[in-house]
Length: 193
Image (cartoon, rainbow, N blue to C red; front, side, top):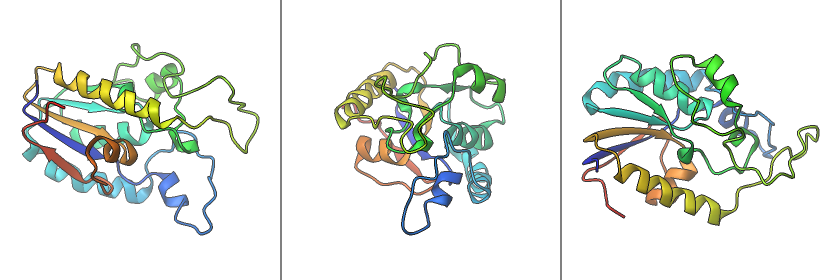
């Protein structure tokens, strides 16, 4: 079991930037990438990342998390793995993922062959042609079950120090702490439950 886990929320996404408008309307940005501000946040994180001394980087398969992980940790000091349990709770268009084959083309330095398609929440009623709601929200019970499975996955890891790049709602439900963009929450020692 890891002794230290650094939870890191992704940088600002184009979805986050678009949602600053009031009244809020889902901008329908599927798997939203980082915004310009998000890339600046990742650049600032990159300067702090070597001090974390991680043995493994784990990232969600959503593009904004992958971009954050690669931007902060692509120096080759630690391998980067994609773990679908770490994906965000599907509540908005940005939480709908892309096919593993598309992700593999976009990020050829990472492996996606272990992901099912689709790897994000789906109940089979989604209608991509309907702009109003091309996804079904993930029930809280399913998110909590996934968080429990992710804790178990982490406990099985042998690396002493992990960086986990993921999402605000997921981390809030995991720890009770709301993280800002590119904020690092260090759990040392990593709690067993």
